[in-house]
Image 1 (tube, rainbow, N blue to C red):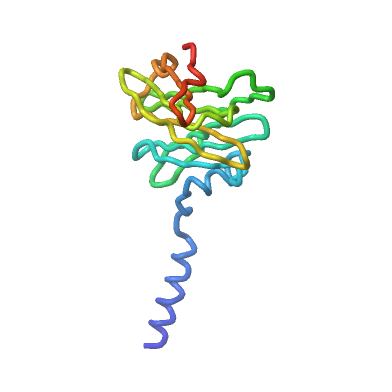
Image 2 (image 1 turned 60 degrees about the horizontal axis):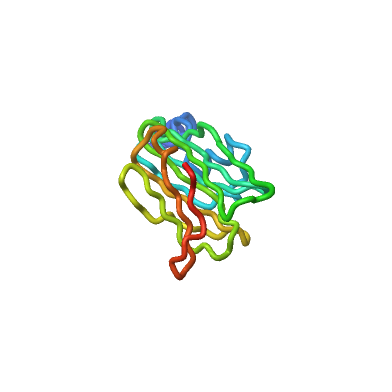
Length: 169
């Protein structure tokens, strides 16, 4: 009986060592597959069951990391970044789009701006504003995709409702 139990234990140990590679989380994929420091990532959002994004900042800008899910494991696809070494406007605006989602993102340089509104395809939504290392970023994710996002109107407002910035797209 001891021999049978010993054989079963050895088989279990051998089989557990042969298991498939562990499924990667988004964070694990960032660390192992991208050159972006996890410390610079300030937001991660699953767009749908198969796609996700992470927003990150750099010394001179910000960017969007894109991920696809492959058999329950998140796989890093690419990083798109924008730099603004000398801001000329109260805030910056950039876009990332796929067929089934779009991201509007920017950095706020004017400390009076406390609200950002994104108008896209007859929809209006408040962007999320995040402070990271004394810098202010805004972003908005739409579950609609395509290059129509480039026609969005972005507005930045002061707390009292005064319009400070409006995109010219």
